[in-house]
Length: 582
Ligand SMILES: Nc1nc2c(ncn2[C@@H]2O[C@H](COP(=O)(O)OP(=O)(O)OP(=O)(O)O)[C@@H](O)[C@H]2O)c(=O)[nH]1
Figure: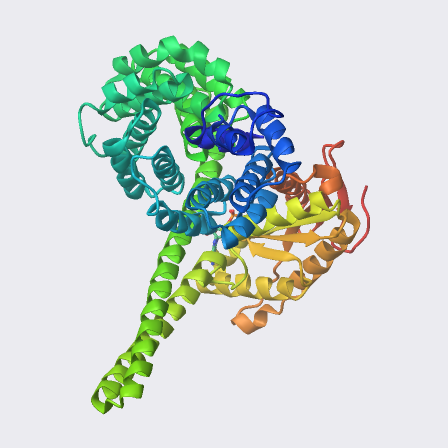
């Protein structure tokens, strides 16, 4: 739901317009209306699409219709299907405007799915297609805004700022100026840089006047800027009067930004009770998926407050949650950075391929003229280019390896596991198939490091990954998701089969012959299992439930397998000897 919300918000830049009776209006007029409709008028859009589908359309009109169908799918949250429709359309489209609209949609659809590599590839294609449009056109400017938003989403704030500045310099309406100025303030904040122009805040507030939610974002971005400059009373003056509006929007990213900045300013000014109230309200909301870094800041600030009040237990618990969320955020950032490097590498490769083709063509031409010297020279160039292409291909492979696999054990890393697991869970949900998760953590691993050394600890991690990898089937996903924590995602398995896999894995780990490391000790792991029937298809939920079961396994003495039981406090399923406990 949140993804849909954010998607519609991103697409807000693209649409605005009016409506007539769909039945009586001619097709091209209907298309114009549909393309310029606000993303909130989903009903009208659906109506127009239905009417157009029943008509005989020209090839160009058919392209617009396909685009609108793709747009509607995305607005309904069916991002995968939308992506397929749009990618198909882009293969054959002959209308420049449709190509830009479609690629813009594709950027947003990929962003909504957290598919950063594909999103970046779409952004590059979008840049090419935009060249076919006039810079003063709404479509060009809207595409620029979408690029800016996307770059900021993947934390490439320099690029976000560059797109925003270009948009600011050519903006032909309030909406574009508002979007550009907001993006400039946001990216400058994140880069911790002064604003490129002191008039930007005033322009932002003025241009955003008619777009209340965007204006509220301007206020939160300016509040962040005041916080950077320690102007705490300015933050309070800016945000206090907007609290009711923030609540009314029910838009999590906005509420999170606004409340946190205000709470921080209150706290700095010694207004602890007010800060506490806002932070508690935030923690009671479902904002976890909108901005992990900011939510981690919320937890940290509240922990500081509790600490200063002497509530050490609560402060510690909040700090633990903060650290966990911060770690997840850093994992996300790593995945985004690697996606960016991959995309850059990919575009270098493409450039090289083009150069190679051109050189090949020249060589052929020279051959026909029988110009020996030229042939020699070009052959040399060709060999050098081949070497260059080979090296950049190897670099690409290396980057992919870094992006997807854990360097020590060679199994999938956490970032890639998250991506694969999300797709697998979505697939299982769509096809109504069962799916299970086995999460395990090595027992007293710190002792292994402390007693036999870190190198021996690393050796154990590799052995564990090796024996568990052997237990996986073709479609299972196995990954190292933390220091000494691993996870299986088992497609088509219920908890019964998953318990079996977990037990086999537990025995395999316990059976590792450590003498080969030069020492003699036992390795064991504690396991938590859950499946879709117990936890549903949401990745965070199913992992949290398996983690709870794992925690029970640890508490009961380790080296054992527990199944998550939503109804009971603890449910032991399997003991080390394989017997059923509860
Ligand atoms: N050798 C090695 N150790 C690691 C690696 N990543 C994490 N660790 C260590 O794993 C240990 C985990 O310790 P704890 O979280 O205290 O857990 P534990 O000792 O396994 O105890 P329980 O989980 O309660 O059974 C820490 O000492 C980390 O330094 C790694 O890549 N290599």
